[in-house]
Image 1 (tube, protein in one colour):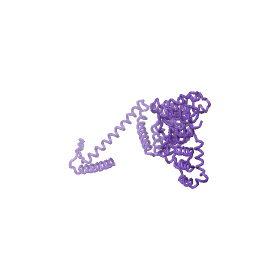
Image 2 (cartoon, protein in one colour; image 1 turned 90 degrees about the vertical axis):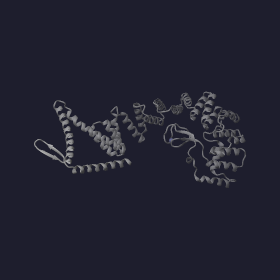
Image 3 (cartoon, helix red, strand yellow; image 1 turned 60 degrees about the horizontal axis):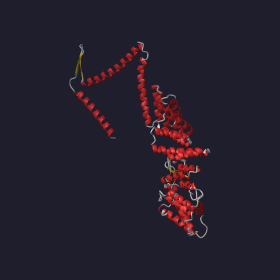
Image 4 (cartoon, protein in one colour; image 1 turned 60 degrees about the vertical axis):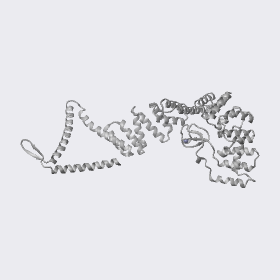
Length: 487
Ligand SMILES: [Zn+2]
């Protein structure tokens, strides 16, 4: 803003100065007397100035003509390319001008103009390496995919531009959703330039999406070696890949290899819950209860999770509820105040039919952090303690509208997943699932559920509302993966 103002002011000042100078020259007396020997004449001062300008132009033209004459002379003396070189210099200048204008047009979003300039630059420069790139980008900008792809294919022919060509076509395939071809191109681009971070990331994402765990681990390793990934992130992601590999091997029925892979995944990242569960089950299959306990306890201390408790229960499948309670103390003793610990102990006491102890274990969780699970546990405790049906139903009704508590949520798109997976089912991002509370909007209940306490209150002597019955049935049976109380 200020700069343009200064430019305008400078321009006006220059015009004023020129006009003023001209007026002074016109008014000036005298002049330049030229004596040619034969004749003598006097020039007005303004004529002198014009004369000087004309002289400069004449000298410039003379030099141009001289350069051409020199080129012509050299040509006559046998230098065959001298004249073409003289004209080439002009062509080159025009070509680079067109190229620069084309890049400018590209930067300002004028795709069609950029294409025209690219064609002009190509005509003068004959340098497809430079101009094809401009053409491809301009075609992409105008949405002419076919043209862009054709131009990128031309870039494949030159070894110096091959990577740019492969990357260009790969991006086109990714945009059109052809991930199979995109994966092949990403592999090719990776082979050409292993240090290119964007290529590494695209390749890794596609490999994980296609369950090519071995390939993905190699790419991840290159990322570590080329310094595009910190070591701690590498270890965690490598563990996720090792775990995914283990799951696939189990599906193939090769249990021993799967066990080794699961134990390796657990070693790489001890707090990765599904890896700890799988490694613990591998140790159990080997009859190594001590290692299974250790692996699960370590993971529990980092991230308490119902799956870990379920696996911990499996270590000794046929024990009395009292014995189980005693054994579980080893698991939970490090973090006694965690909500997961409180709910787990409450469940174990309910299974042992020790309802006052269960209530004590649950503590103030139903006031301070009333999740659906804590409230349904409270309902079970009340029922076991012989409380009135209306009290039990009151807790269950509250459970219906309470938040679900932590779940596997994608850090990237906040999609809630029922079970852990290496890639998000919604946004396909790799290793983004973490065990946490989903954003509030995700668990909001329809407004109609607020009516339930009224319905429950009115019908307490007759039949239960169907919804309450379902929840109650779930509490009594235990649900999903949260059943450490079952043998
Ligand atoms: Zn996601």
